[in-house]
Length: 342
Image: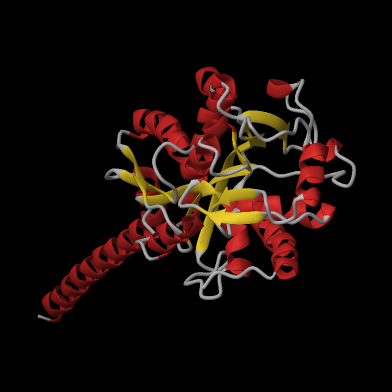
């Protein structure tokens, strides 16, 4: 009897142990699977169309880049990449939508990040922090601004434009989006040479270009994409480029920096991709690596060159440092100018 009893107890114990072992194993497997979830979800991403916000009207540099790069991303990821223009406040309206979106990688933004670095100093009530609330992903391209005038403005060089402005203080007007990178770049030039011209607010780059083409505006700095076609048609007169050194595409066009008093001057459009702050590093890196690959493709590089842009793909870390340093740089220009946007 005892033997039977002992055997029975041992049998039950062995059975219980087997069940316990199975449960523990199952829990361990579940724990392992859970630990792998972030990486697995990043590998599976995207699982639906990706909306890329653009903080300017359709047809500008950012919109064109979204459509160009987005077509390639759609091919490689199998999900449609859609450009979603939300113009206003130098891109800040679109940025606010971005930072309030779910950090799942299905809402991103491509913009002139020069505007982003200026906003903290220019806007008194900014509803986001560009360091705390944004995940830098990568820069994409750099393109210089073209300094152009209406053909009737009697100048051929930057020095002549400055002389005309000094002779007629407050008479020349510049159509710009107030608080934009272009506004601040023009203002920096003004501060350095001591001129007085008037800034006329517009709702976007295309409106600024149209203003000068029609003669309502006298001159402007603007991206190559928006202006070069009108320079070729004779509706705008090209005076200089804003890069520190001459651009290969405009080898015969002097730089603003060649003008006495403006040595070392450099400005331009840095287009970059950002996401909301809590976007996973896996998605950030996956996007960075894919964009870097696409930008290096011969057909994309050729298209960028035709638009007057140069590939400039900074890593997420490099882009974050660049934003912080640019924020500090423009804070000084804004402080000196006294400009603020409510």
